[in-house]
Image 1: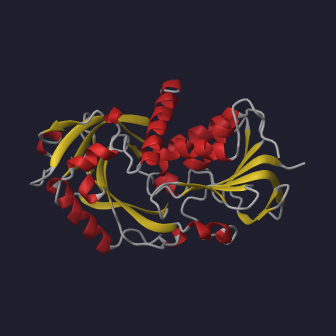
Image 2 (image 1 turned 90 degrees about the vertical axis):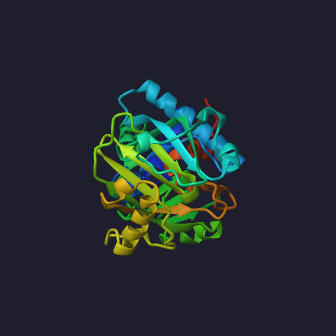
Image 3 (image 1 turned 120 degrees about the vertical axis):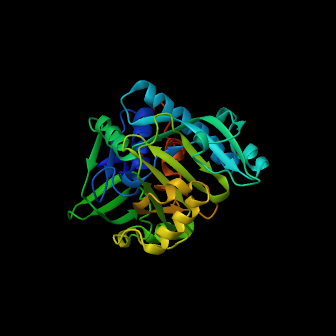
Length: 352
């Protein structure tokens, strides 16, 4: 007999939502979540947690729609969760692109300015306002999800998986504790830790890469009504973190093939200058107050769509992730696709 029906490797927001999806569909399933650190660390702890109803491909738009509904239902069931609805503003010089990528539920309507002139609108750029936007304290939300799951799910924290060995009847996981752990199937949800020797050979054919992510913290308490501003031309956004009392500005850093364990040096002078120059074009009054921030990594797929794929011929090991900076935004849909791939239907216990 196996130790679990499903082992989920990775205790971030995607891993915990996968465990939740499996146990919701099949309450009798034996599920284990294994993480090298504690739940909600890694990219989950540092995520800006912005959700808005947008997708660059039909699949991603469907995923964004499903995820938005899932988060709304989650918050409706437990209003104390750290999910904070926000107003949404979009700036772009490509009106056709905005119309193509934003969902109808965003309800975008033309506007003249943003936040009473706080944002400078460049010539040739249009402004829209909309709805369906929120941000979450993703670390706290993931810890809340794990707290609810613990009566039904076995959590192994501070336990590194040192080998993943798919077999014809089960998957064997070698653990840093010296144990062997057996599961009917395993889900790899490792975030940016793609190159871990335990699963590198399984993941390499996917072609995913790891990129550095930098977000600046901007001093100054946002007004209570302040919402998120998406700068489409820059692939950047400005977010009021009301629960922390400051703004966050995320821009597109182009430093690729980074090891997530090698970023402890913090923000470099070059990246700080690059990010502030981008912010200066839209909010010069805020740029001077951006002197710190957060640095982490995320995984990106070749297609810029999340990867939910079987990694072995018997489909006993499934990869879920590489969401291109939208891990939180699309996590419920990634979880649903993963459960579908595992062939877990509502009311069924997962069998070998």
